[in-house]
Image (cartoon, rainbow, N blue to C red):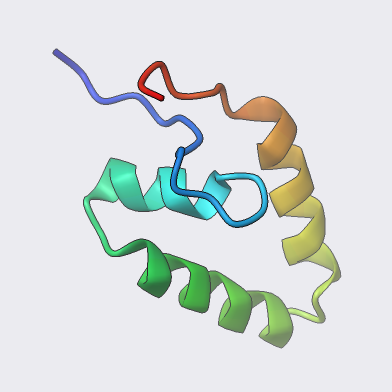
Length: 64
């Protein structure tokens, strides 16, 4: 069986960071904090656009 990158049911906004954490088997809080830090250091705009795109592109998880 293969891994699939999907949105997580453990979500705060769209489930993107939670899905990335599930895929790489990391703590969702660490992924969210890392994403927030990277977004703030990249002038915020690219990180926000990337998150919105991933909200639309990533499929929902089959397990709810």
